[in-house]
Length: 401
Image (cartoon, rainbow, N blue to C red; front, side, top):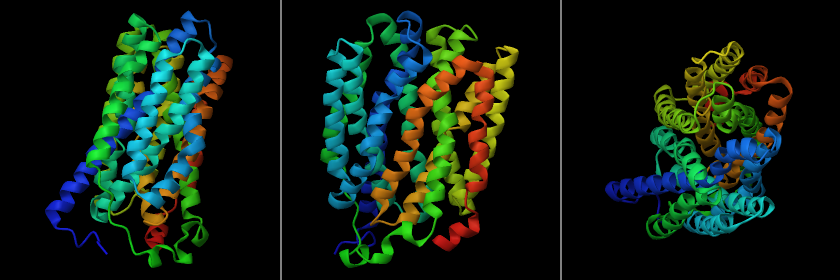
């Protein structure tokens, strides 16, 4: 049976970096589709008369679709491999995007957003699995940090394109770019992604391979990630709206700032991934990120209450900090789950996160409507505060490995 070690180093490196590059591009395209509705909120809110809670529900619809299928896509990747899960899922996203582009009513639009979100979950479940499969442990922090750039990169692309396109050509036109990218990448992934070697079936099928029965480690990481995703999606969903409605920025300028913040956040994920390789722990940097998230949300609330324009800089820092945890938690889950369970474990990881993400739009939108942005930002700081004591210690991490 072919093993990772039996493949020549140059060929192994080429396949690993090809899988990483296409995995990043694939999930970036999927994230662009999922993020597009959030950048339609200003038009839905100010021009269509929708409340923030209603517009937040529209933005959350793709995430709801993802929640329904993440574990299923992960189980399919465990069974048949990553290549066709990624390529087939992207093809389905492109079909749903066609429906969203051609839809006329908002109920019809939401139906296609739901279907597209369900299909885009394929890249979340499988692209991380293929990276862990091809890269050795001592380079996974770097590799997964690069892979985790896809979410902020997708949001960056949405921030820079959706407001401009929607303002000039309408809501439907905003889906042309995600349609093009998902269709092209479906073909490229089908042609060039290679599944990593798998362990012998006898080892993978051992009863002791179920990591959820051995300890509560994975459950704790899942819960920590759910808590840390709330400030991330609060800012991703309402950061642009806050700049426009509270600091009176223009829509395009606000989109550029959010895009810059997401891009810097993407680089930050690579940085913390490298840091985790160097310190030999995913969880120690994860704790630092959680503590930083508390601080930046409190600062954002204080600057928002004062109405200072410098709050835009705090927003940029906050959006950078609050996306930094994903790669650390994701890598930790994949390593602890092992190759036989990583697809399902990563699916469960993403399911919890996207349940929280789907709830964040309408719930935080309603909270902002009730108490205003500053107090809502301060309230959101409670979520990373709850996460800190739940993060396992580095010694527990070593014991599990």
